[in-house]
Length: 248
Ligand SMILES: [Zn+2]
Image (cartoon, rainbow, N blue to C red; front, top):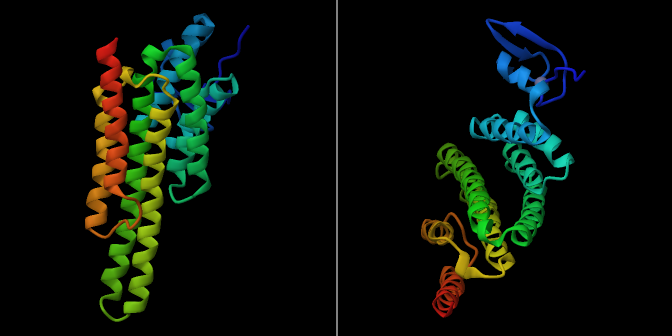
């Protein structure tokens, strides 16, 4: 018979407390029906349930538990689970730079797989993932900005040299976070074989990324990138997509 276990971390040390079952190792809680469904669910139902739990944990910003669960799902070969696993890792250590290349790599694998499997659903899922990358990118920008503001407040005008250095550090850090969002948007558009399938939500996300750059350049938070050039690049893609749509 299948043993009851914590579906997040695999531990079998579950204790009952006030009608709930709590994992002693990772702290995730289960109801009795949830534990029972471990035994009666089909593999597909089990997978759906695990994805839902992972998503709930992610939404609740329980990134370590979500990461463990996504990792288990990724081990079974699910590419989107691998993407979310990398995203959780990045949220756990937002300033670690190697997490970002891991996000982009797994994002690209996911996108290729999505496009090959079901082009009609591609933009729905791709936009969801791009949205999550934007949330992460904006979080990192904010961290750098707050760090700079608090240092600036402490230093006041006593050391212009140090302040200048800190400002450059913020520009570099926030700029790299913006670049992650922009590269992800490029990947989304460039992996799709047919942009006429792109939803208005996808183009809204692209606009949000470009607006963010525009605002942050004006405020001096970010020094890199050419907003106009990027706008033109995506506007061209969008126009091309419209033409394809009209021909079809
Ligand atoms: Zn556990």
